[in-house]
Amino acid sequence: MGSGKSTVARLLASQLGWTNVDLDRRITEAAGLTIPEIFACSGEAEFRRIESEQLARVVAEFAETQKPRIVSLGGGTIAQPQNLALLRENGALLIWLRCPVDELLRRCAQITDRPLFRDETSFRDLLAVRLPFYALSDYRVPAQDEPARVVERILALPAFERFTGVAPEFSSRRVLP
Image 1 (spheres, one colour):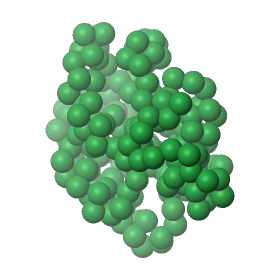
Image 2 (tube, one colour; image 1 turned 45 degrees about the horizontal axis):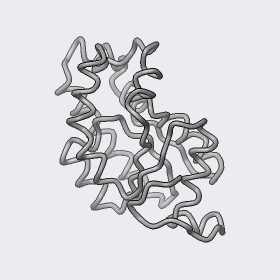
Image 3 (cartoon, helix red, strand yellow; image 1 turned 180 degrees about the vertical axis):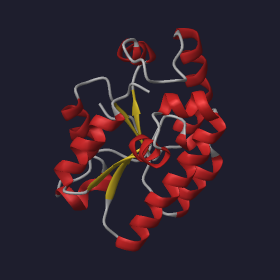
Image 4 (tube, one colour; image 1 turned 120 degrees about the vertical axis):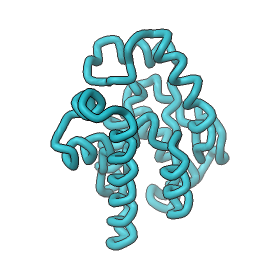
């Protein structure tokens, strides 16, 4: 939450000419409700069920079309074991947009549509629970700069060399400058 996933994903997909999929948008379209409405009406368990269902559809669409895509996942998506397993089984590359907690808090201070963001303490607690899952990512990319710089860092990853023609300078699971 607040790392810039949606913005970075949109820019990255545009630069690569790939499909951009925002999982939160897919969830709201499928449910016909906003995320806060889903939480208020049905609770987090129902939200997570819809999230897993939509993620499975995104993966199935890729399997069917083989068209590469950039998917911005919600902050809790890979904290659900079935979602992480689905992504791993299907060869997804996971990139953690790593941002200092104080910067995340600053960015989220004006957000009113995040049901799991109540206050600084709950935010820090939630992040602490999710950090071990984020650490399972293939790459960690600093995300405190403007989105265009974050996209540059992602495109410099070895996994993107064949798409950009840029020789990799960084190794897997390494934090980029």
